[in-house]
Amino acid sequence: MRLYTGGTFDLFHAGHANFLKHCRKLADEVVVCLNTDEFVEQFKGKRPIIPYEQREAVLLSCKYVDKVIKNVGGKDSKPTILQVVPDIIAIGDDWAKKDYYTQMQFTREWLESMNITLVYIPCVNKEVLSSSVIKTHL
Image 1 (cartoon, rainbow, N blue to C red):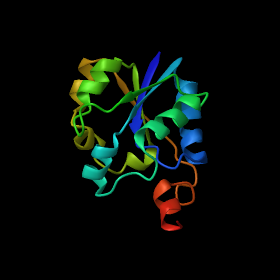
Image 2: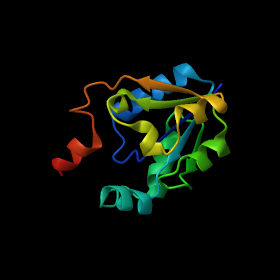
Image 3: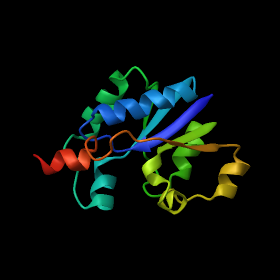
């Protein structure tokens, strides 16, 4: 089974590692779609603290990650998902109360037509283990 997950993974921390560990439990292969610095700046209004190449190197050194690919579609995740051809897409459960489908620009029907299962992974102590909270202390 191949799992796709995406994100910025700026200031890699224990919350990221825990999330990726749970991803590994669900699949034989974990592929991370990593947001580019330009996309993060466009989406969040500021560039990540750690540049893309260094965030990629950190992810590749994580024993739970098999492959890192660049987010080539920006807001539209379908091109990168089609490149990976996953069985599972995993996201943090902090997205359970948000509109992840609109965020990623796909529908439940599209996922079903591609035979992809969307899985929510519990976030552990999100208030302490988020890059956003860490950045407020810099």
